[in-house]
Image 1: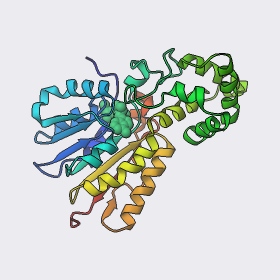
Image 2: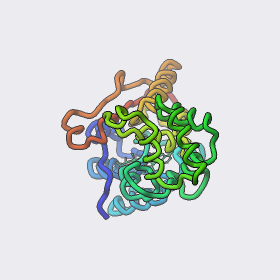
Image 3: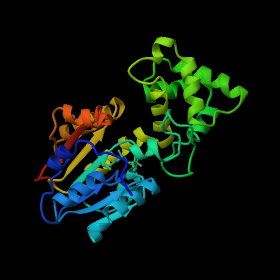
Image 4: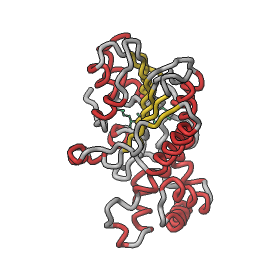
Length: 296
Ligand SMILES: C[S@@+](CC[C@H](N)C(=O)[O-])C[C@H]1O[C@@H](n2cnc3c(N)ncnc32)[C@H](O)[C@@H]1O
């Protein structure tokens, strides 16, 4: 099974999260297809990894990729915030590579991409909670516009929401292509030929809302900081400003309280070479925080 996803900022992550010693445990809290984990296991032969992913398909793909490392790897199928609130593990390295993987866009069949014609689902945890289609077909115009504005930073949110509401009066919006076409028709022509497809921000907003992504990031950071061993490090890769803002502020607050130090005064971003080879990496930002060695 060939991995679809290309890991970002690999050298930088390996350097910042280099194990502290032979007993080191890394929680890869967004395992995906295990790209980062595979590099860690190869580079650091005594490292153990707990790989967490809420998407059962991804957890299985990650497990298959890392199977050759035997009992150095444990796989947990859970939301990362729930994992850290329930598990008693005290890791010294934690990685969060936020968002979804290329697999979700290209092969999951769950409507994450406006380029596909698939059921408009977008749930990472199969079958539980409201799907993207549920939100699009049931929220009021105002709520839908607020959601698209808040999580997509889409300035045409009202116009898009109102067109969605008009369209669903004819028949419910059930596929990613139907939604992408409605958005395409809703926006002015000059918006159709910008740097990104006009549906990009609305699709991002729906995905974030469906999976409670920002709330989970808010929740997980203090849980991880509390769990880290002295000298332990948390690295977070984010892909849009909404996430990065949360990470930046939470890290800054933790450092101000005394027991933690931010190791990346500015976020680490991909080199030009990486962006050329993997355009999906272009918006990645890595921030790393350390629990001071003398703190308990
Ligand atoms: C960007 S991908 C990780 C890619 C991986 N680092 C690699 O190099 O192959 C993010 C993964 O995290 C999972 N995920 C996203 N939010 C999550 C959450 N709150 N809890 C657990 N898993 C999550 C997604 O299902 C996805 O597989």
